[in-house]
Image (cartoon, rainbow, N blue to C red; front, side, top):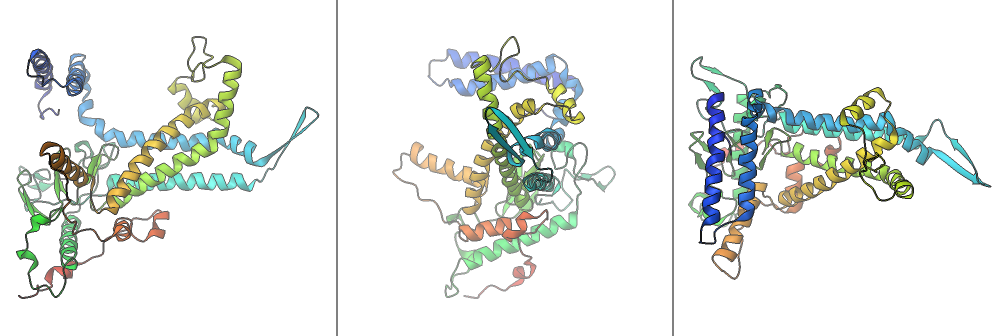
Length: 449
């Protein structure tokens, strides 16, 4: 639920009334006799309404968190990434040295350790951690600040034009249009119009390549509803503009995005035609970095866990601060991390579960997006396809569902190459335009029948 842009008093009253109305609807639906009550949906609705009710009731809305929070989410992600990198160079290099650079000799219950000062393994890990950090941050910022490809209306768009001053304003990070922390992305109208022309050309090329040259039927005379994704142009009433195929309006940033995939809260930007590659590489390097960190810290973490079980038993959290997860406050951890005085045991307990959880989620997320790209579909189009399949089989009780042919699919390998570009370049911090420039294709005369 998103409240309209109103002043503070009306904003307060809006969500108070919203909570009251939601609770009345809940009671009415609960007492109804038509068996239409859905517990899970009502739980989500009550949690949402209750959250915003508490938000306005306790006066948090005066801080305008609901306006600025989206702009700060990418900054939070950058801070977490930098914390993990700093934790390695501040404390975890000792773990690397003990594991790969020190030779432990045990003779007659006496231990003698010999550590190399210039350890090649340590130099390798130092370089690789720095490389992963650079690639993650570079691709993250590229996806955050790079325009996804926006279809502008003839007057510049309602979100861009200031009718009183007759000026074109930049996109704002506060409006979830890219950027963060009040650092706004650059609006280049000529660049956006060029992206639209390129996209029209590539769509036109995809349609022509799907048909045999010996076919006498004109492409425009074909029934374009027989393909999914649809190959027709559409008209957006909200932006009041004609838009190319596979273009959708984002309800969060209020723009029509070329080849719209989804709006990413962590990027504070849409993922579309022009920044999809940076988004995919961000997921790839995040997953790789998390599992690399887990590989480095797995043995030390299990050693700490075994020592904890032997000394204090299976206690994660204990009143006497002897539990395995009884860690100092986050403020203390952050300050000690900056000072370089954070104990390696504390940071291993904190970083390893974080990397494991984030790595698992990012790997699943990345796997799904690779599947979408290999199928020449976006996240939104894949969801539409699944909803259509569910409607045919479960609602209409049809025995089978035959998906419409995808005219944009060029084979899984070529689809991946179109999205990523030349594969060796993905290992360098470079912004690459994966789609070729094909303005001239638009002027190719169609074959006469």
